[in-house]
Length: 510
Image 1: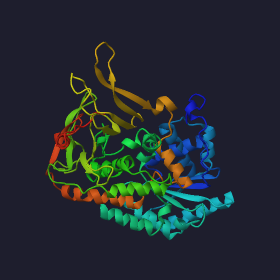
Image 2: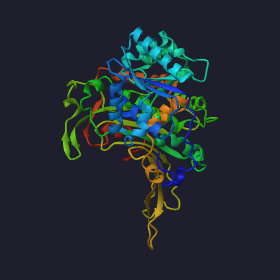
Image 3: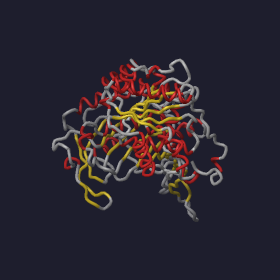
Image 4: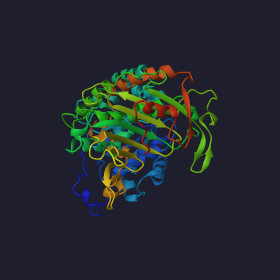
């Protein structure tokens, strides 16, 4: 966290969130997510004095790893990936309570050893310790892990107390509607819904959380946040990278599953939902679900509400790159999309007639995640003639890589003649609050420890989103019909431009 003496806006912010004694158990402890995000998140929470005094970190995985060897791996991960340098004073406080349990994800005896290990920790501490299970594994072993936690009694541990067990589950939450329902049935057979934290790291980003503040803490925005003043909303999740060595994984996923159905829909829900009655987690999630249920079914026919494409050869950073079909591990007749564009219609009083455009793709012009709210142009009266360049006002939330927001206004150009041009007002978190902003996983791990589910996905949210997109996936499955291409380094395919042009809109270039 930035030094409050250097950044006065940070003064007075609470550094104590009241997390109870907690043992975080990471399933998939030797995996990439654990190394890059989870262990650095725990370390930075410790550096900010946000971990409870009786905090324990337990790695669980198939590999046989000694306690000390796991601590060394964790320290190396912090050195390489933490936003802060490794401090021995901070790390030593965590390391002395960092341990490892080896076992299969479907091995009942291994889960009994884990339960015994947690019992031993509680005896040493002398009081109840909240178990927080983080499932950071491939989805194929979600069910065995959940069932293992149920069979050994850990899922119900301290259930009637404030220290009850919790579980964090990484996406994907299924591959379609039926698999999402099956996963939820498995979860609910072991845990109660209030114990479950389905994580989408986008919700932990500062600008995403700032959506609620901008909408509901500023009187200038909420009165205009409706069909009377807003022309369209565009949400872009663009990546510069291709599939690289992950072609085998991506062939089973595609842009719609990988980005649109989860991350992008969460951004949409927070942008368009009705004001919640309070900041209570359930109040906010209730409004998100109501918004998702108001979205109209998608027309999957050519010229309808969905487009898909694959990147072709092109130039990235001044260097030629191959097309998707030439990448390692990709079938020459692959029907997997690397770009998906969606036009959504929301059937409620606030948004009737306002199109929401979503797009996500790989090998695009630059890496950016943005929500752009474009307002209607002013009436053509005072500045209708004379060659005035009257731009539409646009409020954009930049979620990555440089978090902040900007507003496009019309301003007069200095001079004796009356001329105008669009001008941009910018706010950046790094400029105002300092550059060492906590990462998303820090906020989300802490929220799970203290039992705040606001920034997590409820089971009915996941199912409602899959209900919208499963017909699209079924229509696309195994067929290249309607598949377009776009050059690597561009902003996407021509049929995505045509989808907007049909309603006299164009994609914004972030």
